[in-house]
Structures are given as C-alpha cells and as structure tokens.
Length: 305
Image 1 (cartoon, rainbow, N blue to C red):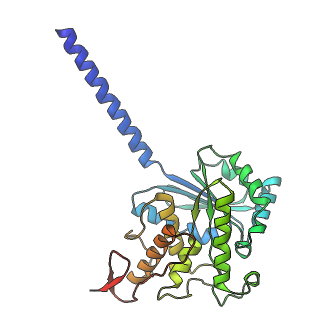
Image 2 (image 1 turned 135 degrees about the vertical axis):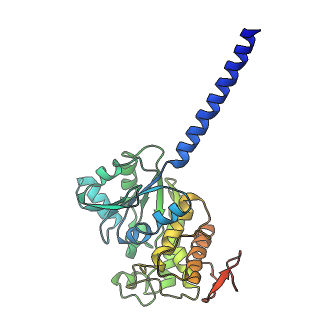
Image 3 (image 1 turned 90 degrees about the vertical axis):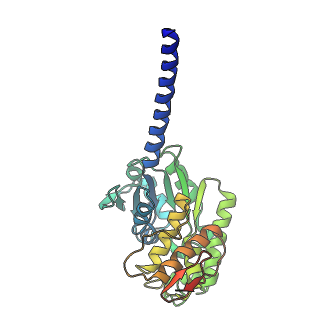
C-alpha cells in the first residue's frame, strides 16, 4: 500500500514539476526582448529610433533596436560595404533599458553578429524606393550576406518607405515627375512585386501607406520636416505605430504612449493611419478624425464629448 501511494505521489510530483517547467519556459519566452536590426539610412532613423521602444514598453514588451545608419545609403552602397567589410556605419543601439548608444566606424558583419536578431530590416534609398530595377542585383546579394551571419530563425523585413511631400524640393523627386501620388504608387507597387518575387521577406512594414493615410486626415500634407524626412513628432510617431503593430501583431489603436506635443486627435490620426496601413498595406485608406477635443469611437471616427 505504501509503495502504491509513493508511486502515485511520485507521478503527481513529476506532473507538477513538468507543468512548472513549461510555465517557466513560457514566462521566460514572454519576457524575452524582441530584437530588431535595421540596415538603413535616415528613413530608418525616422521610423524606429524613437517612439517604437516606448510603444512596446507601454504594451508590456521589451525590445532591443539597432540601426546601421548612413545618411542617404542605397542598397548598392550597403552591398559594397558588405563586400569590403567597410567600417562605414554609425551603429545606433537602444538597449533593453531604453538607452541609446552610438558607435562610429562599425561594419555590417559586426552588427549582424552583435545580437541574436529576431528581425533584420532592409530598404532602398528614398529617391529609388519606387524604382524596382534599382533593387537588384544588390538586394539578393545583401540578403545572402545577412543570412550567412544571423540565426536561421531570423526573419527579414522590407521597410516600405514614404513618398515625399508634394512641395518637396528633393532632387530625386524628379524620378516621379514631382508627383506625390505617383511616387507613392511606385513605392507600393515595388513592394508588391518584391513580395511576389522574393520569398525571403516575412514582413512588409507599410510606413509609406500609413503616412499617405494620415495625409487624408485634417493633418494634410504636413508630415515632413523638410519635404522628405518625417516631422519629428507626428510623422515619426505614425511610422513607429506602424512598426509596432507589424512586429507584435497587436492593434496599436488605444496604446497609451504618445510623445509630447501631440493632442488626442493627432494621436488618433497616427494610430488609425498605422492600423489601416497594416490592414491594407498597399492602398491608401482615408482617416476620419476631427481636430477637436474629442473621444475616439471604436470605428476610428470621432465623437464630441
């Protein structure tokens, strides 16, 4: 009888210990920070170096964010740097504590090996972002280079960037006949073609569509600070909201974080523009938000208090 009781106790104890182990693994996995590295330029600086960490934290997520920065860097230049292992980058890294460090003269090889990255993001320089013929052969070569230096579980992201403001004086705007809608359509059509022809990308982050969505609101075409880089507050926040929803699969609408300088209506525009872009990444969706002290209803419309 005692042996039988002992056997039952042992089996029960083993089951409890197994359940505790599973729970510990699940908790550890849930607490593990999501690690993102962008191989980019000033447009990745606009999109992920501010607000994204804070949006994630507000939703209970931890992040490590890296940005391999060279202003105006194209896929061709990134690939050239990779081939020669050129220490050409300013490596900006936001650690789990939310603090950014900057290291000059960094190489792609070193950055790719710096963390066990969950995601690595690629993008084309803005003036060529809607010119699909400019992507290759540099993109495929760069993908192979990245794949050889990161875990097999690392996923690739294509950062779908934004069209310039209609009044932009950027020289590259001439590639699209200085027409914002034409540039936007070229960018998303290039992304659609890439999605169809290249199975390497797990995510397409449609920041360009989010910005275009926001332009349909009362904000209008005022999301850039110089005609092509994003406005430091609303523009950058809209981009970060898009990244957040894509990375975590959580609707950004209702996230309590917003940077200083935004009113409730502007926050609503950014969050809804991002959410609608994730829902329909390759087409512009109107954002119906009223610029007043209001409460946002469930469908994204605004009701007076």
